[in-house]
Amino acid sequence: MAAAVPYIVMGAISGVQAIMQARQASKAAKASEAAGVQNRAAAESMAGLHEYNASIARMQAADAIERGAEDEARFRQSLNLLIGTQTAATAANNIDVNYGSAVDVRADAAFLGEMDALTIRTNAAREAWGFNVAATDYGMRAEIARKEGVMLEAAGASQAGLIRSQSRTDLLTTAAGVAGSYFSSSLAGRYGFGRRQSVPQPAYRGDVGFSYAAPGTGYSGGFRNV
Image (cartoon, rainbow, N blue to C red; front, side, top):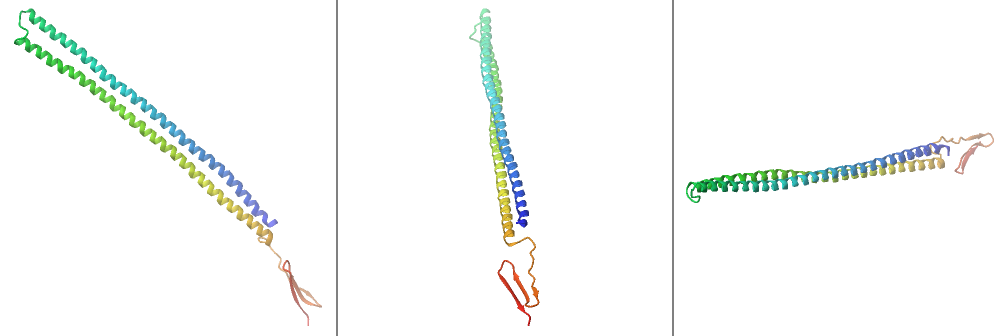
């Protein structure tokens, strides 16, 4: 039994080390999962911020169109007032407002005013287009951030799985080693493996000769003197 003690001690030490490593691996796996969850949460937060910015940009685009329409309407009112004033002034001078240069003046004023009104509308549309482009960009950033968050969470879970798988493999390997040590210790205790055994020596007796016996086998023999 004394020869089996080293095997048992070595097996016990290996088992304790394996348990400690398994605990550390479990902590590492949980930390990896937690990191994945936190990374996804951060990505979701960033995506939410991008979506908020996109909504603001869309509001600014709508506001640009609305302001452009209001500016255009005010300009057209002022244009009509200008044309009316010109017509009244022409009529006050006893000039036929529906003939000749009076008509041309009103036509020129209406044409130039229409060009200015359309310019106001176009500028508003361009401003709105810029905000809409920004909104689209923010929306794409939000989508990308969410996908990255999902990938980061999956990567954390995958890493945790690899850590746990390796931990189980190490435990099985250690368990096999401990079992082997226990088996070896059992053989050592039963058959004397691992310890020095005395070899039976023949004993000389003057009246008989040589005789010997193998311990534990029940076998004995010898020869007599002639």
